[in-house]
Length: 238
Image 1 (cartoon, one colour):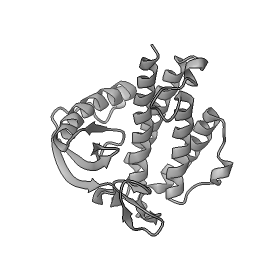
Image 2 (cartoon, helix red, strand yellow):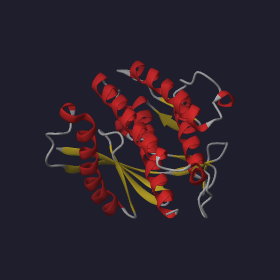
Image 3 (tube, helix red, strand yellow):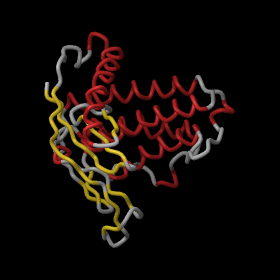
Image 4 (cartoon, helix red, strand yellow):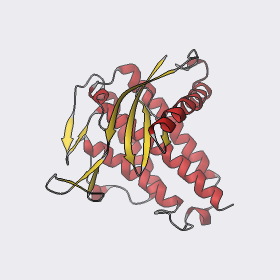
């Protein structure tokens, strides 16, 4: 099977490899070769994860051999309020791939909803193992404590909805309590996603393109990436 791949260059100084047909499957590397190698390894772990969660209903159980097919690379950059490209400051423009133009079909949306449920359960199960005092422990060099990461995940999902113009309430109305925020925003995401089946919808906002496919790609990446982040902080505290 060919693994359609996009590379996002200069993602916080790293290369981010995306498996474009498999939301939630990604890998980082110090250079392009390392990112692609790690994506092959990440897909194996992703396949095991889906097979375990879905059981006999897994759509990945029969995949045995993969062949990385690099479709496109995107160099991240920054712009100012006049949409002029500037050095490493201002608003960061993240990857937009040609493949992001492709509308989502019903099967992809249904699978995306399952992936979101599994990822969220992984997050909650992890948080259940972390005592209250550790959730608010400050770590040197880290922007957020663990509870701050939880808050950020919910806020980012509101922001992704906003990129498509699909939020039901303003930023000021987003719940402030982190776990309430997680639940309220995710429920809206789950209501919105099925309405995007077959939508040929691309929206430009603040100098960046967004589509339903990019929305799903980044949403699943973001939560799984921060699950890894929380594991790292938990390990630092033990």
